[in-house]
Amino acid sequence: MSKNQDGTLLVEKKAKVKPPSLYKVLLLNDDYTPMEFVVMVLQNFFSMNIDQATQVMLKVHKEGMGVCGVFPKDVAATKVERVSAFSRQHQHPLQCTMEEN
Ligand code: TYC
Image 1 (cartoon, helix red, strand yellow):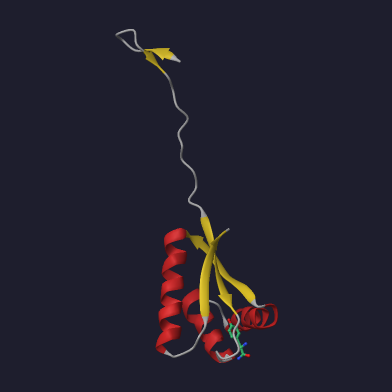
Image 2 (image 1 turned 60 degrees about the horizontal axis):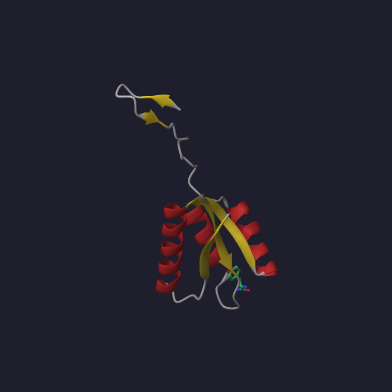
């Protein structure tokens, strides 16, 4: 605490600057979306090479769910929107969601 020129007290506050919270973007398994389509989504929307994309696709296929990447909230939300719209356009039921990391 310190005094102002007029004698009033100044209380210094800690700067409340937090790093932006991060979100995982998740893909969910289903019985209908072709494996090649999922691999293509992971390459095009998450910048994975074919080996990474295949590994993630197979993990989702076997375990039911997998992480495509971790992003700030607005970036994660945009990815979910774009992947969902693209899947719908191609009449695949592929589900993409996000959750706080
Ligand atoms: N299970 C799908 C199949 O056998 C493949 C698949 C993988 C679908 C990952 C969705 O997120 C997914 N064709």
